[in-house]
Length: 222
Ligand code: SAH
Image (cartoon, protein in one colour):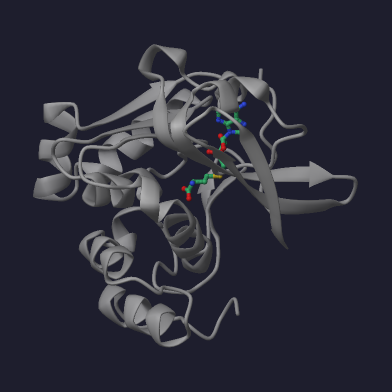
């Protein structure tokens, strides 16, 4: 799965992800097509694999970005409020912003200041990205994502781009009713994606999906 969707351009990468069934909806396809991964990945931007972005972080593989968007899609409606924890390169925050549109908000949180600055610089490489930053449609903030970002809560969708050591209750607390959390969780030597739904009545239900490999959601380096 990791390599066969690679392409020679952003358009080719997205078309291959769709052809291989990793992108299913036209909304995700259009949003990912509008964000050039070369603005975010310093090397091999159109390869379907993670790439180093410095500070022991990686931009996740395109098929993982696609999977996160597909899972969260019902909650990424125009006007929705989204929290992207471990925003790293800023790529996925930029894709979420295209999905929620100008009346929506995306807050990207990372605990490493140079990565917060990197994400701002990356999104500002495109004219529409620059406008999103200037209007406040997208914000990047330095904070410990294990606590979420309560100043912006509640959120329709929360995405976590690093593996959590436990199910952090602050994150489910900051979901709207209804709302959805997409989070990789470390379990022994393994990590799995969990999709956690809060329904209209506030009941929380966890669903365990497939195994993954993410960098840890951890203490900030000193
Ligand atoms: N979605 C990003 C993934 C970046 S890698 C992308 O595709 O570019 C994971 C990120 O999580 C790193 O940038 C790392 O700095 C960040 N991170 C790790 N622990 C964190 C914490 N406790 N709070 C906030 N960010 C954290």
